[in-house]
Image 1 (cartoon, helix red, strand yellow):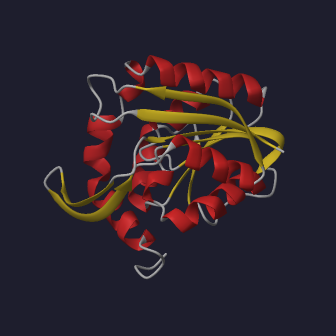
Image 2 (cartoon, rainbow, N blue to C red):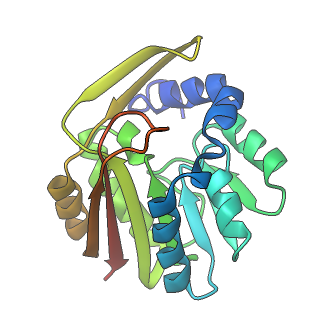
Length: 212
């Protein structure tokens, strides 16, 4: 997308810029994220051997973890992130794409996860993004969405020594749940937790929802 497309071009360029550093700093995070692994395990059981999509996959560490346990596809806005993911996790499939126009067929995936990727969307883009996620899920497919809790919008122009231009939007659980419901999901589980010592100091929210 271009820089005029709702800021998505700026997000893409920012993640292209930090892709290698991001992998170094974040790529091993599942080792200490016990609760995240448990939630991903739920998603895998719900998928029952079907393909799981990792939407906003970054350097592909979540996709790679999923791919060791079943078929998985990672999607990310940043071509540089996708290049890193393909290099680091050659056993999984990766595609470049936007959350508002996913490169996938209707009903292609048994389940999907969107871990801290919707935080870069404008408020008015959340419901369309969830509707797009619903489109690519099979009937009764599950979606796991995780996000930073709150109402803050944090704008970065420097990230790990690199010049960037990206907003991080904290979200409220009820707001996300309502938007998922409006988009055609039934929310089946909610989780809020404190950060791990290794994480940025923000509370985290996760919602598990089923396509209706």
